[in-house]
Image (tube, rainbow, N blue to C red; front, side):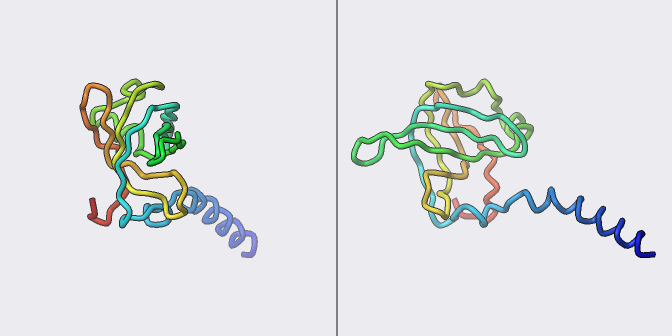
Length: 131
């Protein structure tokens, strides 16, 4: 009986780990801090469970600041009209989303204006209803 119970506990623990690894929007981002910023893309990571893209933008004093933004899952983004080739390093993009709670230059992207002027949904996981 004890071996069965230990085995069951091990199985339950292993299946729970992926759930713990995923975060909610509210855990990292602030729906009360919307942002919009333009910058030059430096890197795109088109990976699951979320894409990440990195860009340089100028702050109010003109100094270049490095940003990182989380987007949705690649499959969802593809269904919404973009793919890993929609933006490339050197492209100027405009990002709308929400700032990270920790005050870093990190955001959760709601939309990205890509070269050519098209805005695409970036797959934000914000479910607060705030925009």
